[in-house]
Image 1 (cartoon, helix red, strand yellow):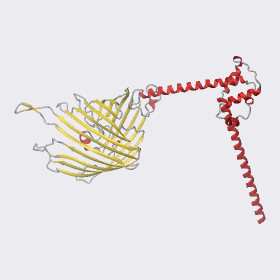
Image 2 (cartoon, rainbow, N blue to C red):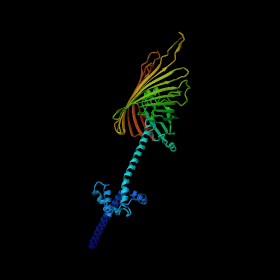
Image 3 (tube, rainbow, N blue to C red):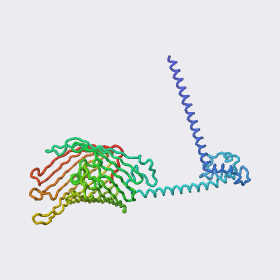
Length: 521
């Protein structure tokens, strides 16, 4: 039994040795085949580069170029070798690849005259290649010049935007971008009386559609359902058409839109860098934005190397201020506004933008009252890819409501009515200290300078708030934010609760679906 086992082991060892030997031979054979194939391929490439096709064409039309040269085979081989060796850097490179005489490589009926003809046509091929390269460079320059005409046009970099001069519009209308944004906000306080809803609600769900209409315009449609006192209201936020190609530096928008005022008004709520609106924004604009239907025209002024200006002029219906679910009042005059923005690139990933806004609005057509509102906005930004970022943002707003003069019944003279003035500002700082984590702080202040008490005396008043927030942002399509606000309210026009301090706590979860358009700086 032991003998059989020992004998079997020897047989297995012998078979393994044979298999190893056979596999080694097969490997060597494959390597040899690859070397031969590489040599033949190299020879084929060199034959083509030396005008072998021209030789065949010349042979077929030999009667057109017949000029016999009497020479023996030895002189032919020498001339062939000299011509072919001139294609290489040295004789050492020539010898291994052309071990056979060229008279044996080419057909026997190819004469020395044919080889001289092929050599002459090599220069012709080089000239044609050079001409082809020049034509290609010319076409590339023309494309670059055509693209430069639209570099500064707003909306040109959108994924669905094409060159209006060369674009094919047959399929472009089908390339529409769609987006959906869901904004969940929970609020809580322990105040008496309560200052928040003490619940988690779907604050807003917004759906957007963006795309190129034709070679001249782009369309935007945003509809939303938002919570108002426990009831969800459906409305159109924006529905407008943009003409980015009226001129290189002129952009026109017509339709319903969030008006381009200051910094925050044109940004939708789910894209804010904080959860709740600043106090001055809520008091003088709206909880989200001032929206209206009309037209905006913007002029880009890129006349400086690091300093760019943009002037926005707008006119809208002016039937209401802020946000409403009805058509408002018919007015004698539309609402006019202007916003001048200035962008300055500081360098090293630092940039700043500051601007000023002026608005004229008619609150009540019956009284001929007039509202004028002025604002300043500024933002300073820095980022290092998506790892670190810093933003400092602020807005200051001032409003005055002017009333017509009234007649004094005792003196029968017209007297001026004091203006109603309000003003406030906020300062916001947000720092990204890790790839997905941000920490921020905001300070709010609001005041009514001409507020009076029941006796007609000026009453001291102010609203002041400090907010600290932490944001976790796993990607650009979602974030979770927790914030705490301490608010101080002083109002000495009343006899009770002249000063009040309350604490408010918020949690926000927002996510986006689909393609979301890029935000402005």
